[in-house]
Image (cartoon, rainbow, N blue to C red):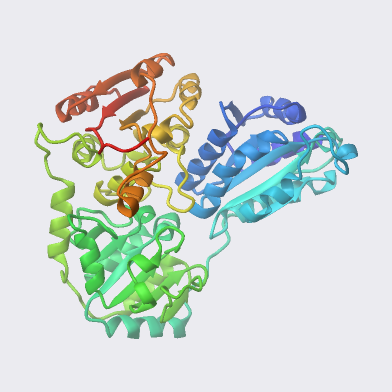
Length: 530
């Protein structure tokens, strides 16, 4: 047995089904070991796409996704997707090859200090330099990546180490590390603080979905009547049909949800990370009373200074809070829910402007509650976050930690492999072409999901900010190929929609067992200087 064989045995023991990546000369032993295993190696078209696939797999399943790249440019190409997983709290294990140890002390072809390059981007990071440490290294990479709060880890395997003989057996995974129960004193303080509030509000963050606390949150809301607003990554923690849901922090015409947040005098933050939504937007100056419930203490930030920090498993904390609170706050902001939800579920007039906002009710109507929408980053993401009703946790995948463009197509592929439910990808023309080559990977794997590409020929969020600041924009315009012909060249069924009627027809015509693309031609953006 070689180290490469043992590494792959460890991957099998961890339950890994797919390793996404690109081959390299330094990976030869690992690749042939994978070929002889139950783990499927998926050659992608770019390492960034591989990292995004591992990222979304980890986010949807809670089990670390795995990406693989060679040394030098292979490793550096992984970095964006790995960093995205780290800030989005998605479990991911990155494995990179490296040259033989005999040349690592000096300048040599493609040799970079990859371990130090990854150091600020991951939770844990190591070079596998001792064959005897193989099983410990792989087990630690997965344990650290998956333990709350999850994130990315990295292991580098020099090619001479990969080929060395070794004996060993994978270390057993005895299940997730138990999360702490609520501290009685902190719990009593949280109950006292909440019961003293007139208009308390739950803020559901990424952690409310990530830790599978949605069921406990829904029971808590039933018991207390407390309304809920979510971050973009907390969508679906409570069903947006529920009259206590305000969707996200800035949902609704003229942000009806934001108005409710302003009126709230106490915020119960469940699994909230400030990287996913800056608290200065909803709590400037840190004036609101905040009860923080999470596995880790709150970040030190002037706009987020909790009165109480309840460091515990969110489900256990919500269950104890529900049992301990006697007060009821039924429907203090039902008017805001009605405004937000009616806008999100309106029926657009066929003659309305072709905008992302006007297409979303059509898309939502065509999708089952359990279907998954994977959003890229761009102006369309803001509309989806604010206006796309989500009814189940984890059914709307939005990156809002690193918020990197290009995640949607590889993310849709990963979602399709990981889940039985139908998958829809929503992307702008900017983000789409960053990793559009992964359509070939998807067709090769026989994936079936729908890609909706909003075409306006500009980097819209940047353009809007420039317009607001300077009255004009610069450096934001670009041209596109024929996106329908482009998709068809991969064997993908594609169509173009230039009206809401055409979009509705295209959505209705898509087959759930086929890979398809709908190009949506948005109404002309304002004239902007190139």
